[in-house]
Image 1 (spheres, rainbow, N blue to C red):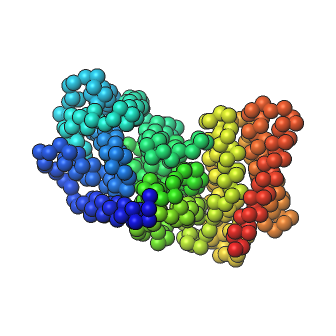
Image 2 (spheres, rainbow, N blue to C red):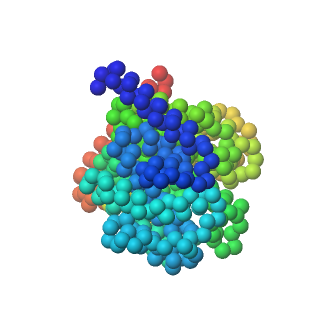
Image 3 (cartoon, one colour):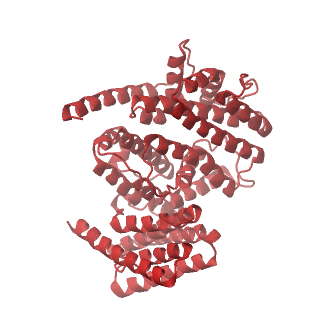
Length: 486
């Protein structure tokens, strides 16, 4: 594509996105239009809001599919949340999935859905027009229709199962987030064709999105028995603090073209989600999160802008733990810097090639928490701080180390002991060298040993894999240092 063509396409995209953003700002209470396509677009913007803005960055065919997928899933959400009882919810969810798939022709009964606020009223308007959503789904090309149909099947099944259980235990939130919102993230990455060869931890992304939903609906949602709204909010934010440190490394795996509408959409959703969570915690935000739409436009053209976003997210991600665990002065998050350099990417790549996907992703999460805790120690050692700030950041570091160990708990005591020994070893080296940098590549060597053991490598193969990982990590560290110095 020529430069003039790119510029023209960019102007068209900008005009479309700004039009959607302007419309989303309106207060949509009731949508009344006889034209089906017009209704679906209006209800999409009214209920999707930031999602609708992000989708407007995409190509026309992807926008159309995304709109149908969102409206179908939003309809399922209405049957899940607004039904009179868990039993009704499970029944209506299965009927809605069957209707959308064309297995039955009778729409689910909406008479017993109860709206509690204007957003619920919009959802009821949507489910009353479910036949239009089904028609739009049937009009998609076969490959796109099949992809959306698989999403509807998986999410409706997960929602129905969890509706029957009707519990708010921690393990249920984790499972639900992965099976519903994590599955939605899988769908988005597949649609945009940005999924790498290594596994992507969409379970964690789902939990972060679920936490944002729970915080928004805190006064409406049920809570664990004996837990006040304030206590539940605090627990939700601690989850976001622990798993939020994983998000930059997850997004860093995604593969975009040099000029990418998809990157703009992902950047916009990342910035608005981060802005929502950090406003709940009460932290100051950097400039790029105050103007997410402008920043998203820059990301369409600039891969470097997306790397900058990831480094900002990595820098911010360690701050909430200290803020929540101590009531003293607020950490100056704007001064803390954490980079996703080549050494970190190399370590992530090693563990994501673990032969067992679930174990690999657990170790990936533990590694992000472990390294984030070490980054706090690096920052503490780099300059003078007040006693209050040192206490706060030390608490945050201890919290992240503890959550890293808890993440590895299902993998057995050998793994837990290994991470503990690695931390102790690195601490001894830090005392000797006066720096917490992993100059020798010990983290990569340890991870390579874990993967070799999982692959049942013989002793010589294991030793070679560990030596190669250690050497490559040392070279990555030197490149990171030279880039930082430059």
